[in-house]
Length: 307
Image (tube, rainbow, N blue to C red; front, side, top):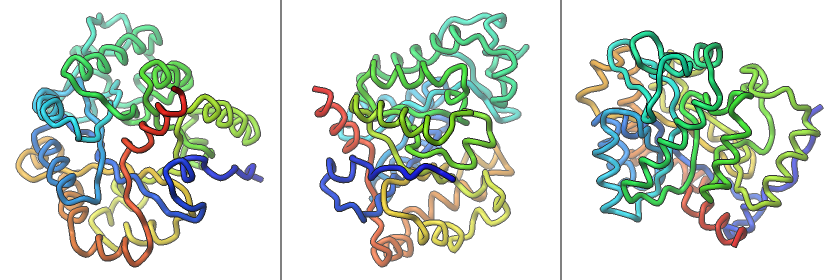
């Protein structure tokens, strides 16, 4: 039986009652291509998606970094990246790195899948790469609000302690769940018991780290992938959320390039771009009492508590 987690202290810190339903509708993969940048900025303007994170190693990162530096109000994080998943559109390390460090394939790109990364991993090289990506964002003049993990690679057991440490070092919340779910268990990110995880979470929160209660992801990456463009599927998952803070990992892309980069993923990425700025979703969230939030509020609360 899972250990009952305590109420998320962020609810009170952010000024919400204990029965509030807060959702971080989060745009992943910003900087991956021009269409991901355009989608992020259009969705910010629409208001439901209020935050996202930049893949500093990707070809279109300079475009979005320049924009964020010129618009410091943009709520954006660092999407720590060790994988380059597409077949014909690839990227590699920011830091100087030789193939022997284990981060790159024979062509010099990041491995396509986290399982490959884990097999070849040099943890010191990975940490150096994480720092290089964070520093690239900082050097651009962007005060990022959080740190998260592309394809979950930073959550691998060999890297997770360093990932959490980076959050404290840079005074920014990292994406960590307050309670382990089946996805975390089945992917082998940790073998901690529920009680041990609860104690770990208590320690993080005592040090000021702001955590989320649960994680959702674009249905295209789950068992309902064939229904990823179905608005009813998104609304069904949101309708049953328990109170607390949910992180919803989205992958929106404006049309124009994703159709060539990832043809099999293009339709539902473009769907998310349209749906998450639709009046239908705005009306649904209002009816259900679901409140979209960003990461800046959490980052501000963390920094205030640590100060």
